[in-house]
Image 1 (tube, rainbow, N blue to C red):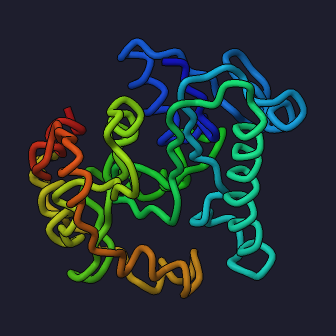
Image 2 (spheres, rainbow, N blue to C red):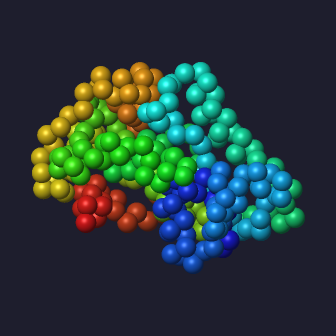
Length: 252
């Protein structure tokens, strides 16, 4: 297929692009910056939708950017960056002589295990959680966030590819693994075991609140418990449904 990916230069978009190309699909990115294999959002608005069989929108301001204060202006920016890009794509699809067969929209706020991955940040594939991952790679210990009740979920690019390729998939799918209910304490122990090192460095909640503010800190300190019932029912096959096996693969 010819796939158009809005916000495709971020962490999830980069992984999705690599996966789609490996499966033989042709990918065009929509980004703020021009480049090879890309169009800009301005070009999309003025020239219309390029010919494509499927469209995905991953775009949106990084809600967990530690360099931005969580004030009213930034909250509006987070919201508008998602709404405006979605509206722009919707208008382009509506005006296109031949609409794509599939449109996948990633909505809401995704929570991640910070020591392995990152919140979406366009044009910065590594995201904003290098600090947390460095606790593992530089100090050789498994960093964990405080609170055994904390739960984080990981968005899988494979689920997005499945939604694009399987014609029977419709509606809302939770982009998480079956092990998404793992607490951070359990996650830290499993990561420490995969590294062959103990989980020695708890991160105080006061540090998280100081960096992100109380409202955003809740996303990291409490998280959400999400079960991918419809994703499994749609026939998606997880490569690593269990946490231990997934961590060993990532570390390797």
